[in-house]
Length: 228
Image (cartoon, rainbow, N blue to C red):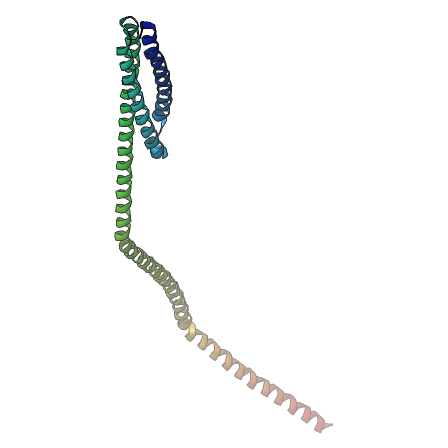
């Protein structure tokens, strides 16, 4: 095999492997962008898990292609081999950067998941505590409500009693006023009785006088009638 024929085979294989490496690198780059944009708090856990699996597969394939490219460089002669080894080094650096970025994003997402799990656990514990506290407070609230109703009823009774007391006081004042008036009227009764007695005696006197006048008039009329 001459140099041109021997170099043609590995060089062709190299070009095919490098084309495959570029395709894989483009896929990894695009999926890393999508992977980095995932928000676990927005229910992206399933998408993150799916992209993580895809990226691991792509990175493994890219690593295998880089290894095959390394074999090709060793099979190519010193002239082209040295030039291609620099190109291979660039592909290996890209693989290293992609893998590093992937591990970093994966770690961040894991931390997000842990925070979300912790927050969920805390919220659940708080909810359970509130439920238990509410259950414990229900009897106390019922007792407090009963006590409040009792106090409200007592207040209403006291208000009614105060109203009744005011009414009784008013009646007492009325009765006191009536008693004073009756006492005053009773004290005046003797003078009234005396006046009535005098009037009656005067009427009797007037009646007697009137009777005497009538008798005198009658006697006079009879007398003059007889004389005629």
